Image (cartoon, rainbow, N blue to C red; front, top):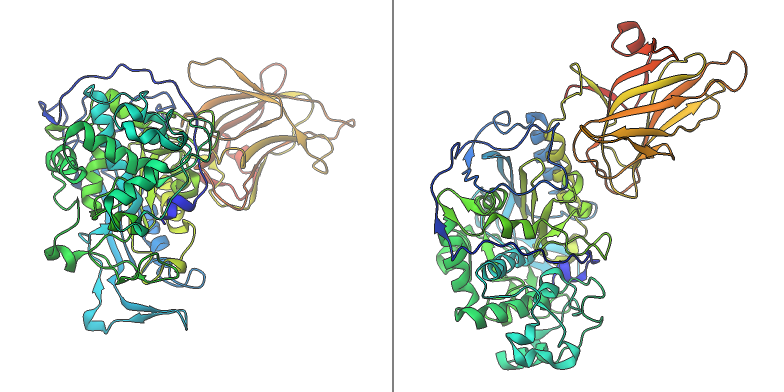
Amino acid sequence: MTEDAARQGRSTRRAFGGGLLALGGAVVIGAAPGAGLAVGAESGSGGGPGAGIPARRTTTLRRGPAARAGLLAPHLDGLVAEAEAFLAPSPAHPWYAGAVLLAGRGGTVALHRAIGSAVRYSAYDEKTGTGVELPPERQRPTTVDTVFDLASVSKLFTSILAVQQIERGALDLEARVTAYLPEFGGGGKRDVTVRHLLTHTSGFRSWIPLYREPTREGKLRLLREEKPVNPPGSAYLYSDLNLITLQLVLEEITGRTLDVLLHDEITAPLGMHRTRFNPPPSWRPDIAATEDARPPWSGLDRGMVWGEVHDENAYALGGVAGHAGIFSRAWDLAILARALLNGGAYGRARILSPASVELMFTDFNTAFPGDAHGLGFELHQHWYMGAMATPRTAGHTGFTGTSLVLDPTTDSFLIVLGNSVHPVRSWRSGSAPRVATANRLARAVPVRPARGRKAWFSGMASGTTATLALPPVPGAARLECALWWDTEPDADAVFLEVSRDGGAFWEPLPFTTARPGGEPLPHPAGAVGGWSGRVWHRLAAEVPAAARGAVPVRLRWRYATDARYVGRGVYVDGLRVLDAAGRPLFDEARPADGARVEAVGWTASGD
């Protein structure tokens, strides 16, 4: 059973807009102007939720310093430190024996680091709950080229192959699966469509033990007879069975097996030479080991799995399956990430049209809030994307400890490949290393102040309250400033508050915000949260008179986060309080005024 099969769902439905470009296969294109240069707008401007995937960028990857990628080096160093912490008990056992970390922006890979061990244990001792370590000379450290069992990250490749066939007109997104597999309709699945498979809204259970059937025909019979637990299209439920079914559709319409499709349509055109199903024995020394697979925690008794697929169903299907089974290394996945952020092209090869790529970054599951999903890709999931999560951030995780996150808003990408089931799957839970590293990469993308050299930054700590208080001002007035925010939706928010009794009691102060070129938007509750488009907003608020005589009015910002996840945080800049005639009562640009700001948890930041 995969990690992803056991997790909570996500999603929403969106009508398919068509408009695909018919490009048969991986075609060769001319190099666009600027090919090979880093791409991506300055982080403080543009790139809202409606931003499209670029049409002709053919940026290729090269290694380079953080500055070339438009990233802040100290936070990349912090990313490595965060990841290394999970090599130690966290809290009872290491989250992984080893990992490879890769982070970049534009065409620059600014971080590519290996930590820990690719192979450390020979077995798991269930009596003592400990791993049986190999002699030091037989252990293998991870290297930047270590190959990992991707587990459910494999689903992204199956999805890309499906979108290619949609682009070519061989597959209809809204067609019933029975149009391609007539025998599939049993058990109430007649209304399941290709879109349902790609967005996990088919109604399939998360997982069934196909490996218990000794023959392939028996496994397919279980799939044919499986009954949906929800009517198709009525709910989101993540299921391996969706992608196994999609594999059968692809093989039917192309006449090629999934491993051949993977090679011909993705890995060969893109030059991903260390990505495939069923790696040959010669690769084994460079592959990270997974689990000592034995009942009762595993469905099969296989001993220490090393060089073969970990997932039981994928193993029983011969190592080639739509939901799991692909092995790869971090650099190859970075090439795939760059191709998608380029709009489907890498160098001179194109595997998808920009319109097709857009389908992967577009939420089709709007009817299921919190479960946003493009075609194949999960969207806006803080539980592993951390502060990189935006409505258009796409990615996936794998049970073995792998993950891939793409953020088109900042043109950045993060790959974490770990062997977290080595020596046993029960040693780790959750996605803490994924969140911690994603938070660090998000912080490494600078936010430039709206004016001047520094702006007030709330920080990115979870489970905290940070306040930014202005000095007292007399009488009625008007507050003006610039505001930038990106917080965990429905959990973290920033509040503008006013005290009319000197600071003993604070109440919300309504305000308006306006994007560049936009109309003012009222916030009557005096708070904002969620995603604001990674742009500065103009803010204005009418400050009431004091409640009692000459007691001055006080204003403050309060940023409150829950104990789970965070966004990129909040920035405030250009604070001014004006009297009725427009004269400044307070202007933080004046050194004397700026020195009177009381910051608790906020810092003056240039990035």
